[in-house]
Length: 366
Image (cartoon, rainbow, N blue to C red):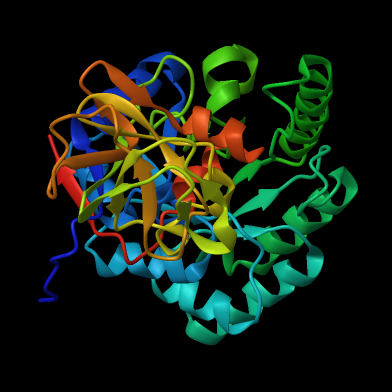
């Protein structure tokens, strides 16, 4: 077992994830919930959260971005359905997916032929969901190609088509475009029904659509960001915490960090904390972000460095080596949210949490 002594951790509240998933189940019912745990559960730790959801019946299955992520879930003991949401390449990806009982996404005729070949080579039936392009412009087949893909897969006898899905690109910003996408989806699902398709799981909704657009829920919803508490009305699960490792007093005119990026305009007390951009605390936070120490907001001073960041603790009289520092999350009455950091960095909350690097231990608490 690796020794962990550095005090920088990402603390994940399991109780928050539990309540968020339960809320999504209640909102979406009777549609099932596919818990999206790609990108290491948006930085929260896929194995631990998938085990929680499977053990407590909080999700029907899990969504991942690659075969490797699916294999990691299987290796951690997950037996629930796992859907690989990405387009698979190379051919060997289909072989590995079928061997591990992963459901694959088919978004082209070429992919359909490859999964048929892989299933026949293994002598094992593959299970897939067909991806329909309705306006995201990423991966997916248009309606005429979807019908051809369905015909070829079902005629092969080697592949079971279990679902049809699409991705709503603007559910949080453009209701008219979203309605148009859902219209395209309904047309295609109806056409499949005319071809005799029965028992398919239809899904289109991400977290925002699942919560706010009832018509998008269909047979299943794919929820990630809300499950982690980074959508309105849900509880944030992650905190990024560390401890003060060094304190110093500086005179007026003293420079802090690379390129003399901060100059003290008065005598100040400076704390150094062991977290930097290699941990996912990006340079965009330099001279802008606050860190919570002693229940107070303390401004980051100078450029964030690879492993350390300097913070103004002049007003925190009891700051000491070992004092807790919260870079993301709550301390006392103060809170720094992912939305606050995202606005500062001109990005989205997804990026803030997924950037928390692998060298930061995930610690799970109730």
